Amino acid sequence: MTLLDVAALKRDFPIFHKEMRNGSRLIYLDSGATSQKPQQVLDAERDFYIRHNAAVHRGSHLLAEEASAAYEGARETLAAFIGAQVDELVFTKSATESLNLIAYSFSNTNSGRFALTPGDEILVSEMEHHANLIPWQQLAKRSGATLKWLQVTEDGRLDLSQLDQAINSKTKIVAITHQSNVLGTINPLEEIVARAHSVGALVVLDACQSAPHFTINVQELGVDFLAFSGHKALGPTGIGIFWGRAELLAEMEPFLYGGSMIETVTMESATWAPAPRKFEAGVPNMAQAVGLAAAIDYLSKIGMDRIQSHEEELTHYALEQMQAIKGLRIFGPLDMRNRGGVISFALDQIHPHDAGQVLDQYGIAVRTGHHCAWPLMRKYGVAGTTRASFYLYNDRSDVDALIEGILATQKYFKVN
Amino acid sequence: MELDSLYQEVILDHYKHPLHKGLSEDKTVQVHHVNPSCGDEITLNLQLDGDRVSDVTWDGVGCSISQASSSIMSDLVHGKTLSEAFLILDSFSELMASKGALSGDEEILEDGVALAGVSKFPARVKCALLGWMAFKDAALQGRDGAKK
Image (cartoon, rainbow over the protein chains, first blue to last red):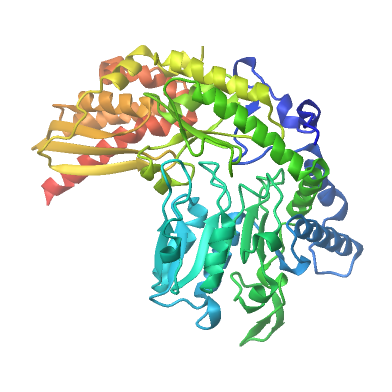
C-alpha cells in the first residue's frame, strides 16, 4: 500500500491557501469537529444549483428529472459506501437528526418491537457524544424506560466486564459510538452486537468518527441502525446519513410528517411511502446530498484502507512525540490497537482554552472544551481537554508543528 | 505578539493567585453559573449587609481569563453598595462589548482594564464575563430578596 501524497492532496482543498494569524500556514487538526472540503465537492454542489436545480420527485420537467437522478445517484453512492441496500439509505440533515429520528420512532408507537414501557432498558456508554446520549436519555424519560450505561476505564476503553448484566432481557436498545470523538477508542462491536442480539435488543451505531476514516460495512458490523454526518467526511454541512435494516424501516413509524413521505392522504388520515421516502419529508438537501456523493467518490478513489493506514501512522507518531512532553496527559489509549486519529490531552496548569489560544497564534486549529461529551469529562475529573484530530490531508509536519506549539504554550505560561 | 494584549502580566498574576477564591461559610445568596460552550463553572457566595456587599467569595474551574476576571471582579465589588457595584459591572460589560475600541476606565475598573484586550477575541468574552454575570445574578436575587 502506497503512502498518501499529502502535498498533492492538499492542492484539492482551497482552504489550505489561506494565510492564518501572524502569516502562518493552516495546520488543521480539528477534522473530528468538521472536515475541510475539496474543490471536487464544492464543484458538485455548485454544479447542481447551476445546471440541475429543481425539487426532486416532483414536476414533469427536464430539471426535475435531472435533479431526481442526481439525488438518487447520490443515494446509490452512499449505500455502496457502507454496504447497504439502496432503499435502506435515508438522507437527513445531520447525524444528530438521524439519531433523534430513531429515538422518536420508538416513542411514536405503542406496539411491536419499537414500543417501550417502564421496565425496559436502554443502554449507552459513558463516552457517547451528546447527540447519542440525550436523545436516549429523553426517550427514557418519555417512555418510563431506564437509561443505563457502560463505564469507561482509566485507559479509555469500554469496561465490558459486566456486559452480560448491562445487556439483559430488559434491554431494548443499545446505542453506542463506533469511535469516541474524545478518546479515539474504537469499540469492540462484535461482542456488544452478539450480546445485544442474543437478548433481542436493537443496536444503534454512531459512526460519525468512523465512517469518514475507515471502511464500514453494515452487513459485517451486524448493527441494526447507523448514523453519520456528511460534513465530517469531506462533504457539505446540512446532510446526514441514517441507515436501518429494511425490515426494521418497514416497521418503524416516521419521525417527520409532510410532503414526499406519503402514499395517500385524505383530510382524516394518511399512509406512508415505503422507505427511504417515508423518512424524507419535505424537499431534501439535494445539492448537499450530491456534494456528499462527490466527497465519497473522492475518498473511495484514494481508498479508505490507505486513508486509515495514513492516519494510524500519523497518530502513532503523534502519540510518541506527545508522551515525551513533560506535563502532558493523554486521555485515551496510548497504543494503536483499536484506536483512531483523535488525541485528547491536558497540559498541567494550563486550561485547554488558553492552550488553544496560543496554538491559534501559530495557525494550529484544535478543539478545546468538553467536546459535547460532558459526562466523560466529569469521569476524568477535568472541565475540558484539548483535542487534535487527523485526516487524510495531515502529515508529520502538522504533528511537528503541534509539538512545537505545545512547547511554546508551556513556555508562554511559564510551565516546566 | 497579538497574544500579549490578551494575556497581560496582571491577568496571569490574578490567575496564579486569585483573590477571594474559596467559598465563605456565610452567604445571603449562592449562585452557580456555567459556560456551556467550554464547561467552565463558577459558584459564587454573596453576603449582603443591607445594601452593601460585605463579602463575595467564589470557587470554580476555568481558563486564565475567567479566573483572573472573577478575581478582579470580586475584589472590585467588595465593600461597595449594590448601585456602585452595578456601575462597575456596566462599565466592564461596555468594555467587553467594545471589540477593542475601548481601553477601559482605570478609575472604575482598576486591574480590570488589563482585560480590555479580551474584547478583541470574541470567543473569550464569555470567559471574562462568567464571574461578573454570576455576581449580577446573585446581586439581583439578594436585592429582590431584601425587598420581599
